[in-house]
Amino acid sequence: MIYLNLFWTFFKIGLFTFGGGQAMIPMIMREVTARGWISETDLIDFIAISESTPGTFAVNISTYTGVQTAGVLGALCSTIGVVLPSIIIITLIALLFASLMKKQAVGEVFGYIRSSVTGLLTAVLISLFMLVLFGISSVYDTSKASADYIGLGLFAILFGLSFIKIKGRKISPIILILISAVLGLLCYGFIPV
Amino acid sequence: MSNGKQTAEKHIIKEFLLLFWVFFKIGLFTFGGGYAMLTLIEDEVVDKRHWVSKEDLMNIFAIAESTPGPIGINTATFIGVKRFGILGGITATLGVVIPSFLVILLVSFIIDLVRDNHWIQVIFMGVRVCVVVLILKAVLSFFKSIKKNLFSFILTAASFLIVFLTNTSIIYVILGTIFISIIAVCLITYRNNHKFHMLGTQEYYSEVTGKKLGKDEYICEKACTENNIKISREGEK
Image (tube, rainbow over the protein chains, first blue to last red):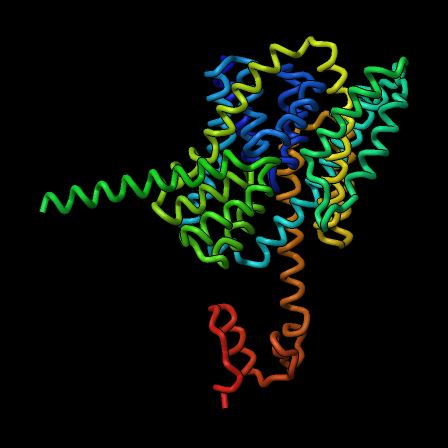
């Protein structure tokens, strides 16, 4: 049953995400795109949309997957699924285990989970890099690889822009996405490949 | 009597509605994920409403960051529970979730309408490159924040290789990490505690100041730190 499936998948995603929305991307890639609920390209597009719409990435992506897969009821199931672990765990901690969280050893274990998440996110980065800029969807199949030179140029420009500070503040992700949209329109729309 | 009870009930409902409304606003006006939410939460909950102190909020952020689940949701739940127990937690969480839920329903509808438009596709070809840049930035900041020791780097490399080269579920990688790091942290803590004091030496050192102590003083200090009692150095004499 699709509703139960959505709920359970996002419950697992909520339960095993440590360290904010971006840490969730590896799980989503594995659990959601593997089930064919949304495609990898759709996921990439949606990460950009999520950065530019209100709310946390977790709720946004679960709502989007739910509604695309099984309508509004599906969205309800997946969103409740992603939020429920937080409610249960945080309630327990707030009421019972607040002192436990202050223990140094507990903090260290969470620190090491972060190390592992860093590795997971690096894997996502490299597979997305290969998918978007070289058209490679699996490390084991590089036969269809073809470099997208416009994309590589854009990548260098955007990466450079992301370090520029205006009035002491870095360019926000939303502005960067808007710039990339305009550049994409100009480069891909008008440069014949 | 019943009149007083009624006003008390009304007061509670009003407080719950306020809790919901505050987090609804936070959910509606946060762009770009959980971390962007934190400044807004601080502004509303500490500066405007005085629901928690700034120090408490910093502790809550630290817990929200390290426990499973999205950080914005965790923080909302925590503050809600602190205020009115479990129901408060649910109220605050609903408040922060409902705006994005509704907005995304609308966005999803619009995406379906414009998905096949040529110009939209062209725009998103540029945007996809930007997403790769954003994830690269996220990876860089993650690398900055992790512990700089061999064990931490091995965990990072191993997780990377397992997920990149095989089809293993992320859940197993996280569970494995939790298991291995609990063992490692226990071993390290055990070794550190026993290094100086259990090797048959008769010398004891203060863990706070590093000064040499008598055995009784050392045991006293150990007991104090374990029970979170602060010793004032002046008061001793």
